[in-house]
Image (cartoon, rainbow, N blue to C red; front, side, top):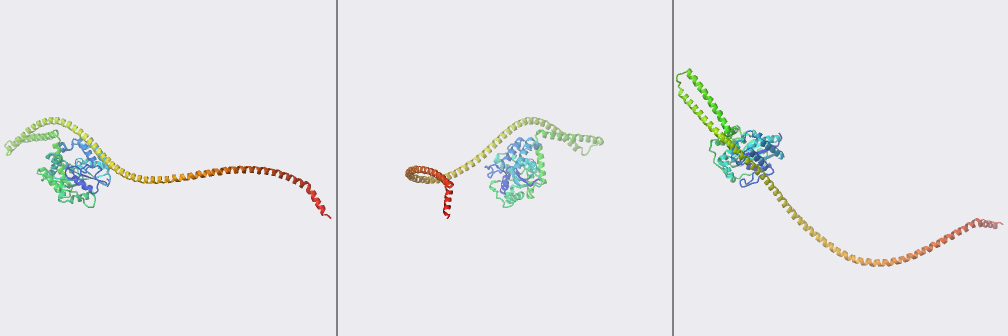
Length: 490
């Protein structure tokens, strides 16, 4: 088991579960992503995750215990935890728990009172420790509130209070269950917030969430059964605020009684037949012993009159049992017919419930989509307004830049016109200069050709001179030298 904890806030409807959930949320513990909206019956909101409510409603409808119907007050069917709808619901609960984040988180729904075993199993599979917080409010106040809100009959409201409270307390895990009493919000406003802070392991200022004007009071219950419950719960309230042995015993006793009376005529008939069979066996054994006593002691016994009266009573009891058996047989046949009609109506109710849940889910999804689109549209409007302001500022800057560009273009165009005129004059002058240069170039080319011709003539003359010089050097120089030497001789 990990350190993660899931605080399950439950109890009978109209018992202050929403008030406790509001205080838990104010202490910083998350309750889920998509919480049901507030309405006239719960002005501050229900603080119930829509996904959890859908899982519970679909399961209760599949088990023949839909909310709002009289059968909702009957005990859960035998073996309901192993039924196919319950297995599917447990898988969905496990998936829901695994997607929740944080070391401590909370889930609020009064229907957890009836379905806690599934949450316990799913939490164990997910490595999460469930902590049960059971909200308690006097049964007459709950019944009166249900009558105002849903139009439920007072007796049905009282029976539902017994069913929810007994189931929650009977299944409450030891050491991880706490009772929060609605009366404490009136008598000691700090007690419940402080207990919640201890359960959640949080500290800090306590939230002020209670408004006395939102609740009404009724006189204590007058029926013996509800007085026993009221007394047992009051002892727990004055004690440590946990469901002790006495409360658990009272809860299991009520559950067993409810199973007997809620099992239908066939099951009740079986129990009565077994009891009557026991009476008959006891009567036969009594007759046998009386006959033996009369054989052993034929004299009248002082208690003979009492024994005769008891024998007559047993005979009458057997006659009554036979009459009851006949009536039960007739009731069994009527029950079978009613069972068929009930199954037909239940199938229709389940189909209508599934259709309603589908429509409700679609409606919820559509509302969420509309809300998202509205937020997106508002964001787009905001973005558009910002972009329009930015566009206006940019256009102003662009217009200023365009004006500057136009002015620069006019100046440049004027300068270009002037420069173009100068360029044209320059081109004309350059054209004339180019023509003069061409003429000069042609004269220079002619002079170059003349010089080249003169150079060739000079080369020819130089060659001739070199040839002449060579001849002179070869032939005339020796004779000249000889003459010169001869002149120097004496």
